[in-house]
Length: 93
Length: 98
Image (cartoon, rainbow over all chains, first blue to last red; front, side, top):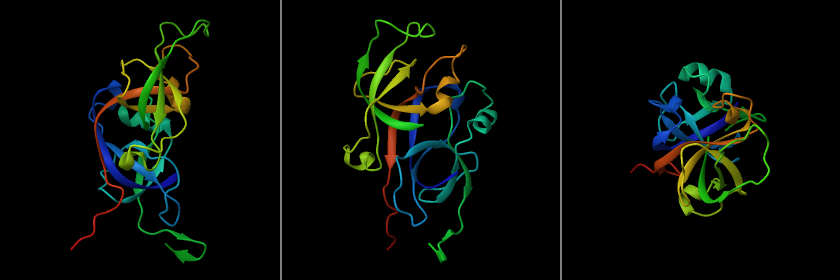
């Protein structure tokens, strides 16, 4: 699981059929102090998060395939939860 | 899935027997700043494509073991073009409220 901030979304007409109807958001990976930490990923959003919200991403492709109801889906990253507070090294970020 | 810009094609003369009629793209995955600047891509990767992406197009690339899921038989693929991206909306920072 990784911390990320939702920074946008994409639209796509021609795509793997398993993504039909899924919300595709751009999530920027961040560290515990909200600094950029890795390339942005396009993720599916089963819970409904808003723009610029801090979230936890999960890379469990198995659950993504269950959610999309397609065992052949190449989907890997999905939004697992919305972050309230991150405390690291004795400080709240 | 990572966003990437297609910059070319690859063709093979000898191939792994599980690959037949493959279409391979060379693509530059987007880094943290690419959506804003159009520059600063990551290092190029080769992507297996079944959707027919063209040079210059933005695609969504699924990587690692999930890239092999769409195939009937076990296929050695670690980057799969899962979507042709029409529009990208990106805001690097939350706008300040007045």
